Length: 490
Image (cartoon, rainbow, N blue to C red; front, top):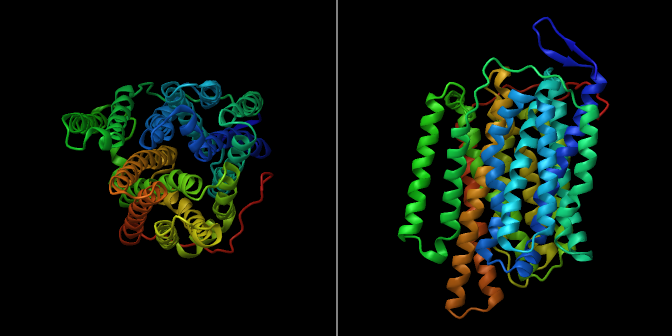
């Protein structure tokens, strides 16, 4: 790896090597993204094989999301302290071994525990990946293009994941959606050792905010656990209220720690910026609706419409392809022409409309009339809004804190997804139980539950759109025809 240092002491890498390093970083992230979407297609098979209830099934997703979101900031800090390549390799190794454990799981508890470890490995990989991109690409235009490639991999990985999940689950069984990570992880590990920069400039302070990471993660895990189990044990029972109270105390402790520790995991000064604060709230609300859409629409298509796993994978393909196309440049052109606020609010309005369409889906629905229109709107909305949310979260942040700001908004996405999924899965389960108690048919009851959850998810997305339109400060627009330097990765 050819390295040079500029007058200010910043480490820079030769042009070609930067793009080679980006490719291997994106390969690692692709494995993480694949695992996130491939699981959604296989959820009904996992439920039937291991005997999960509908509410408990959410923990196959939530266990991953909570550790992913809770430890992303800590993973970034560990990379700063001990080297980004070293932590990237550790994260890839941990994720690959946890994937092996998931593939061999034969009980609910074992699978959920392995998914939690997967989430930790995924958090380290993702946090360090963002840091590596920010470090490798210091020029604004090249960094924007590198982030576009990164976003394309995230969206394209979703397309591959839903297809691969359907294929593996149909042709083999759900265990293989995890076992497929093992050869991918081995290849990424070997390429990383050869292509990623090994140099590391340790910060002056080597303090690690372990207390902050532990308190915020445990707080959110308790909150989600209380919400997921609220239908079974009662929302006003001492157990549910007690867990929510402890969660609130721990969240308060986290904020207290962050305000006083010398090197905080999440510096509260970032939120003094209106755009940063608004973008993170939008991230929480939007992710609550989007993660629930992935989870519940897969169940709707399989359990209500009777689709097979491969059919579900193909059904998600249009939305993922649209998101991928926006990531490769369409979203950037919209931002350069209209600024951040218009495409963000417009995209969220389209996503709201898509969720509203799913909230009207009938028991005897068909793909063209009742699935495809919502998928297309959600793909367009997500594709338009994703990059503007990230840009808004970093627009008022100094260059030397842009990686931290990116980690914060990614954490907001993961936490919003976990909490939103817990709430909406519980609402769906409660509505289904109520309909069954009233004598409704099983399919009608299931569909009623999903429709209520989609409607609440649409409310989350609509609120995010309103906040974006009213509170975000408009960023200056640029010439949409301005050239971006070509790169070997293009």
